[in-house]
Image (cartoon, rainbow over all chains, first blue to last red):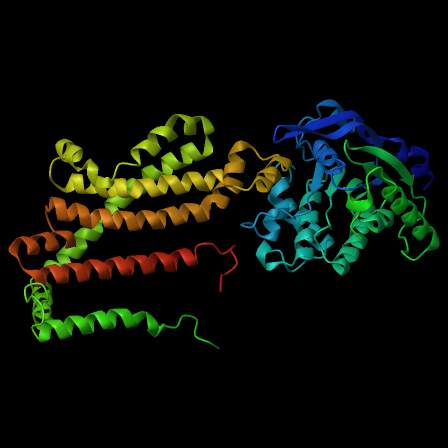
Length: 269
Length: 255
């Protein structure tokens, strides 16, 4: 215990976004998606990005995944500038994106081709992960045979398979019903503790952000920029009815509603 | 438990009506007897073609021709389709020519082909291959180009190499479209087979029975030829539909 405390894991920087700007050109018009955004996430931290649509939060996540590049500024993960996608950075999309022609097992195995594991070790890792996300017994099922929640569980297992240091989550539970969603929030928390990886999550759901995050980054649209960063010092797992929990949730909701824009495009609640 | 495939008798209403009308016209001498051949004469013609082996030899030869022509056309179509579907550089070089040539009807090639290959089996095979070639290329290319971007992003995120991406993402995603192309190719190859046989008439074949009967002025022979062509075509079509329904176990069964 004391050794862990001495090493100060929260000091090491996992994600560094420095002065990032990005403009998209759609139908001949320039749409500034991000302007001069800077953000640091410590190793092992769980940070959420919230904000109305058009605030560039998904763009930021895609840059960290290496699926998009900033026009200006730099994006680095563990000290390395992000230039292309890497297995060291996992990403979980809102649509689970399981390959429909592969079984759950084969989908989870997809990112293990560079792992250096033997076939047997790979099988072991795949079945461990399937058990971790609670899908034991569905190894040979095809995605069309799974419910939305089960598909997203399989996608979580797939993104964890290459043992990424950082997991990027792009509204991972946004398409699920509220019951499945709160169940999977608890699962995510358990996995985050179990795997001890840095997680950066885009979400529309303020309660979800408060439930899971160490810090919540509030963003504003047109151009996308950071409006506020809120620390959540409550111990996990958290209770949604806890007065301190509700306080922070209200504070975030207020901070989202006090936008310069009229409250038309505020968080869907 | 319900039977999975039940024959819907409503599908037999039209054929039965046509047969009945034909019978009424031919049996009562209401129409031209040369064209509206009586059932008994058709029956006799069938018996004769069966007994002298013409029908069996014709069906075998036609199917063999279809198979060879289809194999050549589909294989080259698969190769070209994959080339232009997977490489945009190849697509830019080949596609304009391909789509221009595609506008030429299959049988417009006949004068050239007969000049090159002679009036015989090779020209027939070439016409069938051309018939199979175009739909294969079009569907294979469309399948490769139509892979949803989200799946390609999964490949990038998983650090798949170009070859791995082709093998694990592009080809499986394109497979239904490729199969649909091959199904269509069998249908067009079948049309080309009968057309080629009818026009070139060398050796045995159902289309050749048709052409020879017409030359002899025997309308009962023509009708037997048409019936045989229809039946074989229908059987091919059903066979393919059956096979393609169970080709992909990863697709939700459509009920």
